[in-house]
Amino acid sequence: MAFELDLQTPPAQDVPRLLDEQIAAAENALQGTPDADATHAARRHLKRARAMLRLLDADLGGRAATVDAALRTAGRHLSESRDATVLVATIDALLDLRPRPATAKALRSWQAALRSAGETVVEPDALAAARDALQQARQAATGLGANGDTAVWTGFEASYREGRRALRRAQAKPTARRLHTLRKALKHHVYQLRVLRPLWPAVLGAVHDEADRAAELLGLHHDCEVLRERLAGSGLSAARQTRVDALAAVRQGTLAEGALARCALLYAERGGRYARRIAAWAAHPLTASEHGR
Image 1 (tube, rainbow, N blue to C red):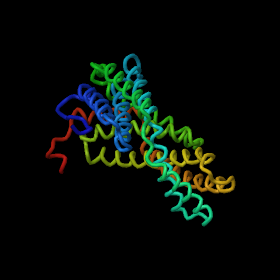
Image 2: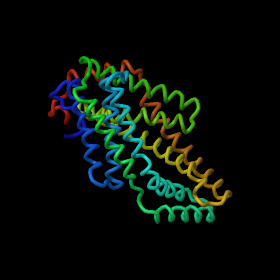
Image 3: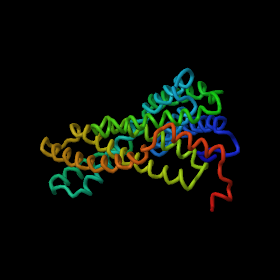
Image 4: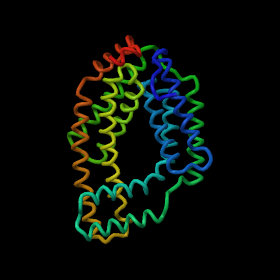
């Protein structure tokens, strides 16, 4: 089924289904010997599951905490397989900035070395650990549901407020760490908007797309940070490393500016008011014919 609410079912009853489906989808993606695409799909399903978990339990207490810890563990075991692909793509973005010929040549040399190393796959031990963590998450999530009809909106409000707090900190001092924290909170919001979109597709669809774009910009910012952290092992000379680092910092500044501008709009409203408004839409959802008006 699509990753969205079934309007025939109350949200408090439907979100547990979405949680279970995303954990199962992550398990399915890791069957056999998963390639880079399958691993990426599994990581996406894990993030979606964690966003759903926050709708079920705003405080992430009790069993919800156990599920979240297991999902986080699974994601950590899968994360390192992404770095080589990220570095190649980030180098392409830096080359688009038209650096000095010598710097461009050095970047292409590093990129060629990364490509010749081939796709990084998840090591067997890490893959087994990720599968075990997913199994633990699914077992702990069995029977987990929202505590009352308003729990979903309480969870939505809590997630949104977390993003607002992260935004204020990033606006005050836009360090890589603070922007990455904002991105993690924003990704939860993106997936929650995706699920809630059927309540009013024209409105929530547009907000979702803007939030997704902001999260993408923050993700590219983090990719630049990964590249800067890997420079020491790149084989480039110290002088070339300094120039590439400066180039990456310039790109990060542009990305941060675009992301923060969008986030300022996305998080402009107070969490309680926002959650109540969407809860009201859920109480009176549009019919299929009304969507097209």
